Length: 341
Image (cartoon, rainbow, N blue to C red; front, side):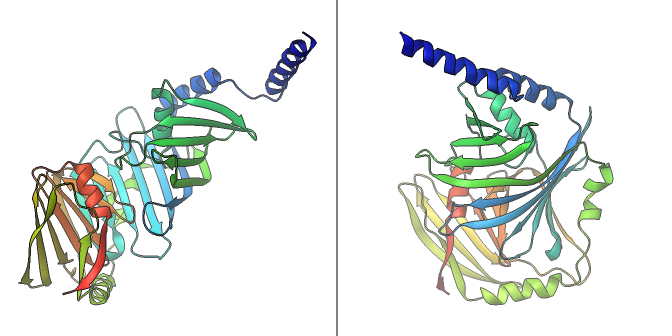
């Protein structure tokens, strides 16, 4: 009996200490997050991101700016990898969604609901939405941080669970995303975060964020020379599907390789040199409806029944009438240099 009283007293004391320290209950945190989601007009942050989705960990620096009002939402997400390869930028403004590679004078424009259609591990409002929508979430307080574990809705179906760590003012501190075996695949650490920064719509203007690069032609040609004699092949193939034909076609920009896969989920992969931009002038590809697709090392573009992305000056396209986009992305993530032509 005394032992039970002791445990109850200790629990009461623990709760009293939490309240005295100003820590909030789960209901209070959720209520405050919901209010933040409804009332915030934007934020700006820097983050580091580590991805374990390939053979080796990859480090990225991510810069995010977001501005919203009653009518519009603006985003600028800039990704730079550890090898200082050409950085990419996802831009959303009144004209649509853009995927930009400024140093190569290359851009895509498409109409999309991004980022509303999937979880986004480096976007604050997406993390809040994941917390609010998961009725089975777990909650804990660890070292003056609020920790939620929730389900996810990422494009990559291997990313099934996540741990979201918030500071005591409910700004994001870190995110860890796990596979079904609870192995960590992605970690994001927020280095700085500012609510309601001094941003205006010009910050999200495409022309402002896509200055022409005079070095772009030389940069593209240099990358193409490095992989001139190499063929990229997928290490992942959908079940009951296999390569049945591979052919080469000469083009003005170099050799185009077309690989046809047949079976239950037939698809075609096209590998071709990225077109070399003019000394002055940008290449804008209009895609209509589409979405940016996270491929690990790069961001690709979904358009209709195809997926397009560029690595090391090589452009890849996967097209299929039967493959779901998740499967296309899985094939794309598995593409590696395997042989010479």
